[in-house]
Length: 202
Ligand SMILES: CC(C)(COP(=O)(O)OP(=O)(O)OC[C@H]1O[C@@H](n2cnc3c(N)ncnc32)[C@H](O)[C@@H]1OP(=O)(O)O)[C@@H](O)C(=O)NCCC(=O)NCCS
Image (cartoon, rainbow, N blue to C red; front, top):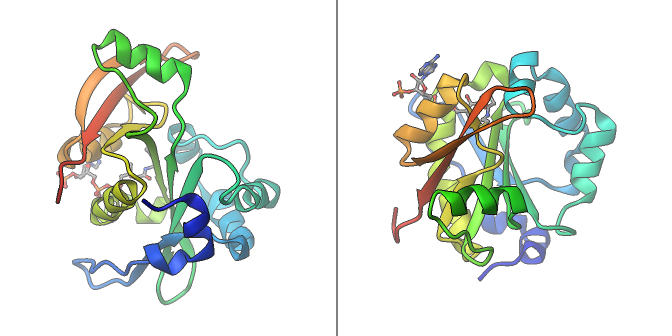
């Protein structure tokens, strides 16, 4: 089983170049310490709508540095999508390897016992100009492969998905996530919990 340290020491182990239908070249790879400037550009360019759907603690260089400093230090693996020709970061895919009590409680009330040794949390964010073009679907098998290499057999959504984010809900549904339940956000809006079972070879 791979560890976060193994990945940080050898990011090429997880680097992939999936074939996009439109011929565009994209690189899927772990975030590295050298990425802070490009990650800051990615975060800073996210629209208010994207920031509402994928909320980060900051959208500037300081936060990008925090994310790069956190590599292999905590319980999160961050992967990026890089536009091949330009080297621009056009996506950030987060895998959380620790579960939080609120997730555990919500899933338990839906009859599902989460287990930190087999479950992980997934949060994808694409640059606005790369959303709705099939890129998220193209790279989901690579995320699943990564989760399996980390010993995980199920993926849940990181903080759920907002019910008023129809593109993301459709994205998860069409890629095999099943609905588990719903909950109310602090602002009163509705979010959905969804889960993907990683069957061998899926
Ligand atoms: C969510 C996200 C990762 C999905 O990746 P993506 O590459 O845009 O998704 P895809 O293009 O592969 O699939 C989107 C699907 O939603 C459909 N869709 C797009 N807009 C839609 C809408 N308003 N209502 C319903 N379906 C919609 C697309 O047609 C496509 O389905 P189809 O292939 O059956 O036609 C990406 O859009 C994103 O980063 N969004 C902003 C941040 C975000 O919402 N993150 C998720 C937080 S839970």
